[in-house]
Length: 477
Image (cartoon, rainbow, N blue to C red; front, side, top):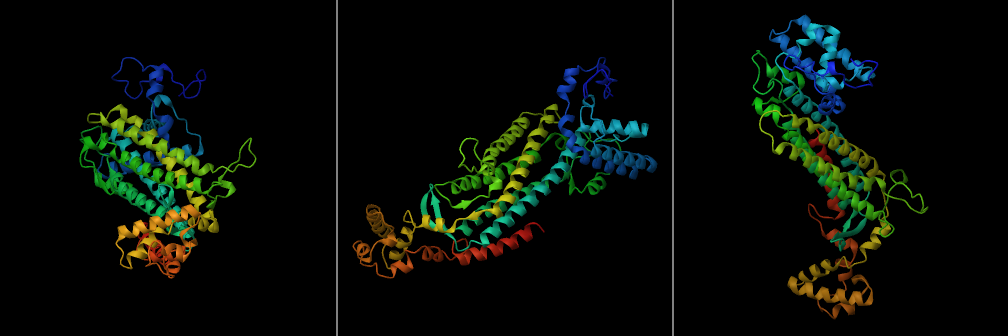
């Protein structure tokens, strides 16, 4: 315990060798104790650490290492400690280094020597590996719920805009007309793959290291499958060296998180462009924007801008974990203390970004007429005119050249293809007849013609939305 002469969480010389005092002849340097401590950030594992300890004690009693009375004392003590932590009355001590020793020390203080028996048959190495997996499993479940909410928001907005036409872009230049609903479904597909990746990652997270002890297992007659069942793990780790030393499951999560953020960043970039005065495709509600301290007219899309920026830190979190692991020999090394903060940061950033998007997307207001007007600029139906000629027997390359000349005329006269006269079009091909205006050169004809799975026609978009709802039900079942 700290004394009144020291500031909170400071370390006094007699505190720093309590966990391994039998081996050491002098106390750990106070600065080193603080420098090597992780309790400042790993205390967020407290629920998982207590759950793991309760399961471990239950298993030890089952195999006869603890008595039932000792098990009950431990469980009662751990539950009381959890209440203290949640009430804010628990004293976290840096000299005890991490969440595990803080809880175990408090347990021993509460119930005496029985508390010291809890660590039988395990090490902090397999304990922390178990805690991380339990914690990450819980966080993945929460992130999946946010992904589902965002996906449903996209489907709801798409369903309202199956007929709204906008320009589709390549190279950020007008390419072909698409529906706004179709564009939103592209975002949905990105997020579906993100969901699948996270669910697949969760399978590898959900394997239990506990029982591996420091690196070689334990001499006690433990029942690892029973402990795994108590904690909801699908399997136990097969090799004790690997179980305590690798963090590839955390790296895999950070890779999945980086992809989520990359997708959100791309969506953010489009929203930022679309909300600008130059596009005016969508209106982002005021509650997701801020103003300027000097320019009274400004309405800045801060939420998508910030998410676009936050993607970089999650990419960095992934690189940090990869770099952390790449040079480590088996088994556990102190380097692995540095695995938590990049993991925590990725989790917190992805969760916050998804929450903001899930709130913002359903509230977007598309400017349908402005999007339609933009689709009429840039000769977005040029490919449709080429297809029209191909259907009349013209080779595609020849049709491409014919339409290119028609576009050149349109550029010179500052008119869309649909605004040229039939006589002007026929100077490039006498196969062009009056039906071209209905069959090829209207926006509606263009989008309706893409009437196949994955196409942009309103009929196909409606069908895709219906399928998407079914996919979500199956994915999150």
